[in-house]
Length: 245
Length: 311
Image (cartoon, rainbow over all chains, first blue to last red; front, side):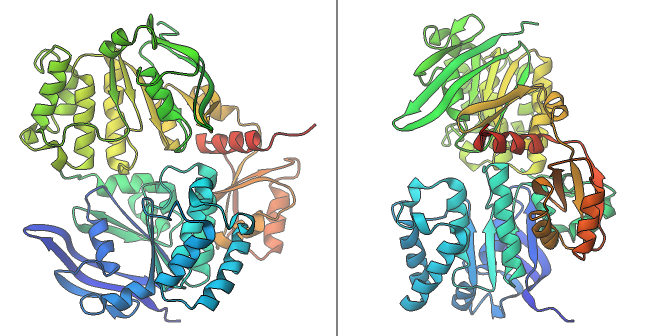
C-alpha cells in the first residue's frame, strides 16, 4: 500500500546572507508517522521547522507541507498544522476552558463545534472538574497535556512539537509520549524535536542534522544497527560530534 | 578525605503558599562530584541559592568548609564559583572582557589561574574578541564555567549547566567536570537529565522540594526492590496498552523501543506475561530480565511517595 506523503522536502536551502543554515535537505514524512528531528544546538533544526510551518521562506528547493507549497501557500500550511513548544504553551491568566475556546476561535472553528468538542476533550483528559481553573494554578504535567491537545484541537494533518518535554519529571514525560502515540495512531503526523535520546527511540523515523546538513536518517533500530551501537545516544554522538562554533 | 566538607541540615524555604524546599539535609565530601537530580520546579535552584548565600533559609542551616552560609557569607562568596541556570554573563562585553572582569572582581588575573581554565577556555580563546551575546550555547557554557573558575574557588556550584544543551555538548561538559575534580575542587551540580546521575560520585534524587534518596548511583540502582524486565513486541503502542491492563503488573514504563515491566508478584514471571502477550496476538515478543537504571529508581520512589500505603 502506498502511504501518503505529508511532508515532502527536496534540496531545501536556506541562507542568511552568506550563512547556510539549511544545506540541501531532502526527506519525506508519511501520514501517521512519528518523525524525530534531532541535532546539536545550532545545527539548523529551528530554521527548517520555521519553513515547514510557513513562517519563513526557503531560499531554494521544493517543499510541500500537507500538499501546499512553502513559497506561495503559507496561509494554507498554517491552517493544516498544529504547533507546540516548551516555551509557548497557554495563557496563564485564562482558565482551562477559555484557552480551548480561544484557540478554537483562532482556527476559525464554529462556536457550536468548539462547545461540543471541548466537552469531549475535557472529559478525555479528566479535566472536567478543573475547567474553570486558571492555567497558572494547575500542575505542569496537566498544562502540557492540555497544550498538546489544543495544538491538535482543529484536527491538523501534522503537529509540530519543539522540545515538548524539557525539564519535566520522568513519569509525566512518559504520559506525554502516550498521548503522542495515540495521536499518531489516529492518523495525525507528529514532527518532534528533543534532546532526550531515549525519546528518539519512540520515533518511527529519526533524522539527525549537523552543520545544516542531514547526516543520518532511518528508523532507530536501523541506525543503531548501522553504527554498531546499542542506543541512540551513541548514534547521536557518532554523527553529530562535529559541533561548530 | 573530609567526609562532610559541605553540610546542610533541615533546610526549608517557602515563598508565600509555596514550599520550595522542605527539610533538606545532606553532606558532601571534599573533592566530591555531587549531583542533585530532579525535574523543573523541584527546588534545586532554591537550594543552590541558599548555599551560595543569595537567599536566606526559613529553617535549618548549612555550611561550606567552616563557613556558615548565613553568618559567614562574605567568606563563602570568596571561595565558591557559581554558574546560575540562566546565562548571566555580560552580553555586551567580549569573551575576554568577561573573564577579565570576573578575575578583577576577585582581585586576581587571568594569568595567575590560567592553568585551571586552560582545558575549557582554550576551546573559546580563538573567539576572545567576540561579544558574549553572540556565542553559541555550548560556547556560552564554557565561558560561564571559565568565569566561575577564574578565582580558584574550592567549591563549584553549577545550576543545571546542561539544560537545553544537546547530547554532544552535554557529554563534553561532563568530561570537563571530571578534569576539574582531579584538581580537588568540590562540585555540586544539578540536572533534570537522569542519565547524568551515573557521572556523579553520589547523587540526591529530588522531587517536590524533598530529597527522596541520597547515595552512589550504583548503590541506588542495586537497591531497586522488584524484578524488572525489558519487553519488546512488534507494535509498541499496542504492547503498552496491553501491559497496562495486565493483571500481575506493578509498573509499566516505556523506555524507547522497549517497555520496562515490574510484576506485582515475580513468582510466575516472565512466563505468565509471555503467555498473556501471545494470547493478545503480539508478534516478535522478547522479554529479558534487566537491572534497574536511575530513571527506574526515580519513578519507583516518586510513585511510592505520591501514594503512601495505608496500612
